[in-house]
Image (cartoon, rainbow, N blue to C red; front, side, top):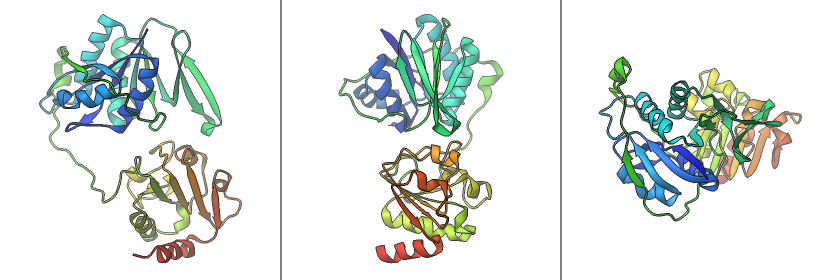
Length: 316
């Protein structure tokens, strides 16, 4: 049987969405063990168990130490004892950190940007290239565990109804000077609405807005619709909005019920991050804009006229 280990990212007793997405696929493949850093393993054992996890390997409380070095070292030592078939991590800051460290410690390569996993005498990772027009399938051939970094929204998070997972504390090897780094402060970005990558409705703005001040129309429309505001890379690079707003290959991948692209021409790297949306509405004054090729509804018009009209029609 395939033995799959999944990086479980949690914060204050809450399991991250991408962790639950990974578990949905992992339990299809075989027996699932989660590995975790922090003091809240017992708090999340029931939720992880309901998503197919039989066992949680945890470092326990790290006393504000960096989670990456401790977790990677402990998991690598455990993996050498038990030889899991594959190790799955989400493409997040934490996931990338742990994956890189595991790669060095286990002398195993990492396959990144994965959107699917296929069991065929070992696990094969499916990675989209050329803007999602072609898929590359890559398989590990060595004896080391396959390490896969999986793109968010690749799988649908669904509970399986299992019982509470067991919790096992794993030993952290001596980290030397690497273990001396401490987290001294945490900054949590405030938001009035849903998270961009979890919202059912996303309204994104691009260069067609003309200037940074006009992004207020995107935020106002998102607020009225109970959605989240997003942005193209062009206006993030221009400093109009923070990087956390960016939708696309180098930003967040979103799959909302409704995606409205206002003043976005449709660069390939942007469309990779939102083309999985159920309904795509594009607003652009250029009828030849690439965004219309994937839109379910296209409005050829000036965003400076269309967005105010939408806001007025919706009202308070």
